[in-house]
Length: 253
Image (cartoon, rainbow, N blue to C red; front, side):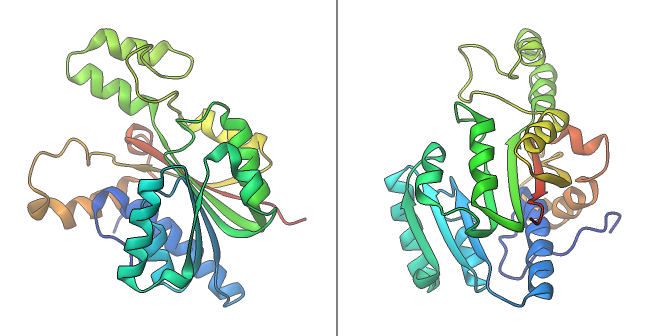
């Protein structure tokens, strides 16, 4: 390994697209266990059908998923039942704007917010709510769409006008042609996170080349996973990835 990122947990999904995120989360879980040995209280905001929540519950942690889609929550409950972790997974139907109403202050040791900040009206307000729900000393895991990757993808496909729109638009979107409200860059994301009182500890790129690979996953899975782990924290690869993953810490009082 070129990078010193930790190995994924045995319970973690092995798709290369999520290998980097799982490595970061695994290290955070190990850090917490070394300090207290206790079960983590995890809050997964926009957790969908439990792609992260159920494997985390299988590791023995208590996970609350806050998700607006009733269909996704139904799938989450079924997935949790199939995995035998129903008692460790709580499903709450609400969106990110309602988080202060459904999560007690300081109630989570680890907060996940993956692919959510692109969609909310006020990401700064959402981050304030995430920070409020996180216990002092706890961590917040944030995954967002990367503007630079979107610009490069459009330019390389010959869509230069759209690429230019993404580059110059204040929120990194193609007006009237996008399904999300904004994209981020590392500097803008860390500034936003800092404004909520959280302290950025790690930034990684997720999907440095994963979305560009055309070969079948069976032929590239392990090698691609190793490549993604090795390049995730290395500039310029990190800043060209499809998504940006950031781990922030809530200071102790």
